[in-house]
Image (cartoon, rainbow over all chains, first blue to last red; front, top):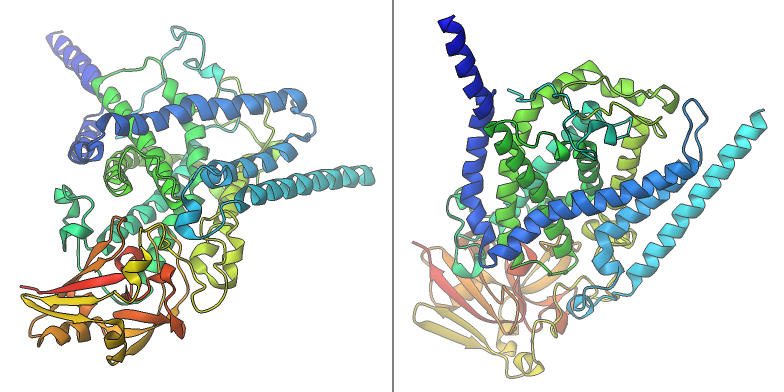
Length: 159
Length: 434
């Protein structure tokens, strides 16, 4: 009985601190490096850097991800598949939107002409990127539509 | 050592994303997360290694002018003399670094999508160890996004960050990698078990009609009330792969150069710079660097110094010295590079000899007339000065250097990052090494 009390008390302490002591060791080592590099990262503009660092996670998790998830839910509500039913057109919308959106997400400073000094620094034209993105988007949409039409024709032809 | 628990009953979780039934995707689960995690593990290892190499290529421990992170301390412990062989070394390492970074963006986004329910774990803190792990995850996610965003912005010259790119990206990488290694250590057992249970090949053979949610387990990723699948898991992975291939295909051309440069539709250096001997990529134009016509006109002089000895040359005198011709590319930290150009000029070691006999190896400090730019002074190490291919070039591809390419004289050193190939050189100071 005395043994039980001792074990359960030790167990409760362990549950509060960490059921997995190895995890504490790994994290301690990791935080050691973080505490060394962190202040150097924060540098002169500590607040600005912290805002960027933590803000990146916040903007992605609470703005970007919910944004595209809601858009996808809307898409599924319009044309999603019922359980056991045939696949619908929604993937033919998702793919071009995903690829086009990805290009825009990575290259938006150039595509949307947000880099004022690009032309004077590189000697290259900053105007071409928007046009190229629009053309690539159009090609993706048209290709997807043609592919969709082809699958529908194929399915009808098989019946 | 995986530190995960069986999910406690969530009847006490407030309505919303903290309840597992809020998440409806039938594809989410440890398998998808493990596959994406494995890809990122390999990719980020290569990114970190090429990043460390890029940092070393700047020789930051050689001189203050090369060092944009003077408080690096122990983090610079691994630094070594950046070699001059092979001459395309930096072109390779930095081309891989930037191109791979861009290519991995969709993989990172997919990974974050696959684990988003864990952001809303309930209860938010179960133990001290759990709290610390969650802090580490915040540093992991914030760090990954911080590194990718600063990198992608920097290659587009979009300098909106809170400070200079070099310290932010360098120290940010260390904070990120610390969290990344902890995460890898803590999650590898789970990932290993998951992938052994259901292999990649099996899942790649599974079409949409046979796509089922994964069995519920202790990871808390599987939805208890999934929607019917609209895409198979192989379809989802295929979509991510297509995203990566699209980015790869429209970026790598700026590093490979030649006719493939035209394929780099969205990369900042995917456009041609006209034709002719000076028709290759310019890092910074003369105007942007603050070079005035009077600085590079007939009044220009080249001053060579060593200890208290000095030799001053006019352009005509420089052109009379014995010349070498070498074929070397320019490779920038932004990931783009040119193909080999034919440079003609005077070897740096010959210029050192001009000031006096060279008994011991000499480093060089090169100064430019440009009035702006973080590297208007740059230091070269003795192995770089000694290499017979390191020139003070006056001509390229048979013609005089254009003003944008550094007229009247610029440094070109094999395997060195672009900024260390100083343009519009006006003074070189040689110092004997210890």
